[in-house]
Length: 162
Image (cartoon, rainbow, N blue to C red; front, side, top):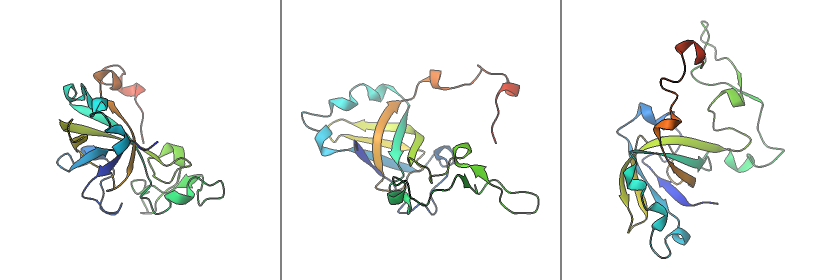
């Protein structure tokens, strides 16, 4: 269920950062849906105590997203991430679940944003570190907590990423 809409300066995916942390000064806002504003914006009560929020959103502005929900869609089991290039300059492939590609069976996105301001009266969150296309559907908002971090819990040799 759509709980709000992400408003950003990115009209399309072209030019949108791949990770919000790579663009910490990019600002945006999340406007809660009208049905969530009835009787005040109590859904946001207490959120101002947190510095960051996780935002679960839909890649519904992706040019292929409308077909992502169909079993006969364009989806392929592998994708060519732009960061995965060999010595010859050709991009390699990875299984879609080993990437952060928006082209997924369920086109859900997850981003971590700095929470700059909570406007309870306007039912709006002002955030920075934005990497979401303008108009994207917001499905959930969760406060970031240090327990979400792996920092210090794993040895460097235990942590793997590609």
